[in-house]
Image (cartoon, rainbow, N blue to C red; front, top):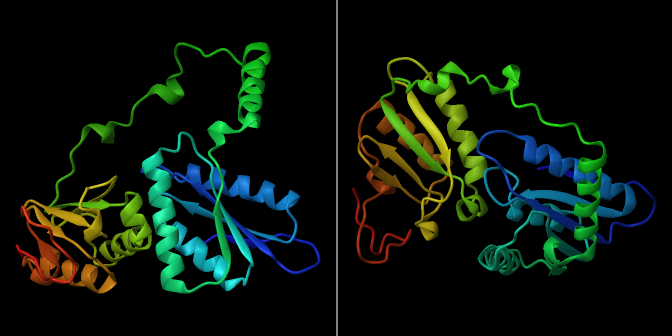
Length: 270
């Protein structure tokens, strides 16, 4: 978790959580969010500024709020710094925050900022970018061999024994999928399963849909859904399924018409 206290004297009274969107393909969004956080710290002294990602990353909103609670701040403002912020996304972030408040019992006051799209300074910033692009921007060349040449590996489906789709959509990320996905990739590397004849081709994905059952991953060719994952579950799946070839029934689900829960009450196992 990236966490920094602004320099200056006095107590840290407030926290700010900057929420950005992650990427399946690179760490650039995290780097840009970190740069924004650094700039904000320079103008808001004695404020705890923490970055969080809506999806595709380890720094979830839940972890960011844990950091604020550990700093004993009196109030926290959550700022989505991406556009557009759909009503469903905003409602989901607030749901995650309310659930965190219930579970943590934290006494600090938590508020959400309005969308950047509705702030007058956003129009001013975009207008400034337009002016710079038209007045002094570098024209785009129709060709750039150094950038436009595609990687030949992008035309190859690598041989593999298992194809794993690991959800890192917003809801699974809030349930810890970011850290868990990193753990899965490390353990596959430890076991030598990232290459060779027994290669496990692991791919991060967006939402796989059964959000209440997250963290979720699907393993092919069997099409086994594994739900409610934690490190113990991932370890068993690696040892028993990827290496041993047997489905781990304690975490395996199959499609069903009725509501399924992680408690096992209506848990049709594969």
